Structure formats: C-alpha cells, structure tokens
Image 1 (tube, one colour):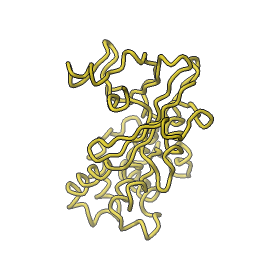
Image 2 (cartoon, rainbow, N blue to C red; image 1 turned 90 degrees about the vertical axis):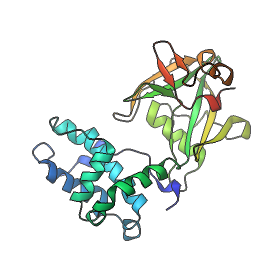
Image 3 (spheres, one colour; image 1 turned 90 degrees about the horizontal axis):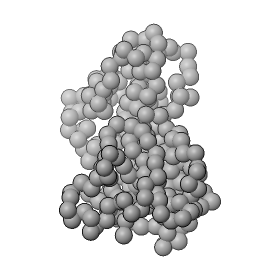
Image 4 (cartoon, rainbow, N blue to C red; image 1 turned 180 degrees about the vertical axis):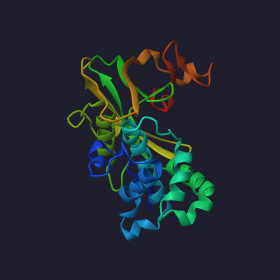
Length: 252
C-alpha cells in the first residue's frame, strides 16, 4: 500500500445509522459492531495489509470517541494506542496479530507520519492576516492541512482539507502555478501548502469536522514566527494564544 492510500476523513454520523443501538450495548458488543463496520467487510485485497487495517482501526477509534461515547457518556475514553490494543483482541480478523500489537502499532505510527500532507496558507484581501487552526486538544496553531488520499491530486487534497477544517471552499481561489505553493519535507513527511490570497475577513469559518478542530482564527502575518525570530526560542509563541506548529518553513 502506498502512503497516499490513507483516507484522512473521519467517519460521520451517517455511519451510525442502523438497527444496532449504541445507547444500550455494552463495550464488547460495541467493539464487535465496529469490527463489522470497519474491518470485516474490507475487500480481500486489503484485509491482509497491516497498514490498511491499522488505518481502519483508527477510523473505528474516532467513530467510537466522536459518536458512540455521545450515546453513552459513561463509556471509557481511550488513547488511540489503548483502543487499538483492545480492538485487536476483540476483532476476529485482527486477533491473530494481538500478541504483536505493540510492534505493529509503533510501525504504523512511523508509517503514518510519512503520508504526504497538503493544505493552504489562507490570506485575507489586504494581505496582512492569515488563518490558523488549533486542534480539539492541545495548544498549537497551524495552517489547515491533512493527509492525501490514494491517487488524489495535491491541490484537491488541500481544497478538501481546508473545507473540512474551516468550512471555506477554496475551489475558485486556489491556484496551482508554481509560485502559489511551497513544498518541504519534515521528518520524512512531504508537506505541500498553497498560498491563497483574497479570503474575506468576514467569512463565517466553521469546521465541518467533529472533535478535531477547536478554534479557527485570523492571525497577523507580522505576529507569525520567522527564521529570524526563531533564533531566540525553539517553540515560538504568541502571548495568551499558545504555540505555533509547522509555521516556520512557510513564512519568509
């Protein structure tokens, strides 16, 4: 499986529509249901691919945290690693690898960090501010971006991820000419960001994801870290806002 085969979109509420009730099921029944939804119906060509299976386990994890626990708030919240460990034991297709879970999980996390990422530096009409997003958990601000899907063009990935994270459709603003994007590699991961000016200051940004984006805000370009500013600190911060993540390579 190539790195681009990973789907970065999280499961939506429509995935939950069935006669099965998460409100009354116990944890094992829920995990068995998630096994059917995300693992057991995979095509045979994908069912022996450990990376592909691990991506499906990750989708099951987000579905559990985003939707199932809303139906039963008393259900435990897990880290991805802990959920994956339990899921490997419960799912019939994964149980044969449960004793190797620690190694497989670490290999998957290393593999995942190599999947190419695309996004956008969204600039307002007066060229003095840009949009940054902050995760649901944590305190880091970054440009909206996400992992590319199989055979997906880079600019299409950027448009899709920005739409999901901010609610802003860049299809009529994003340009693919060389001078409108910058690529860099960080820790074996290729990152492509498109520079998109002309975004209205008063656009009603609203994430289309669930429990993934915690905040969307305009930041003054003059407040962003640059290589010169970074000489005095290894983790550039803005007072009261938190820290910046993967900003430096795309700020001149």
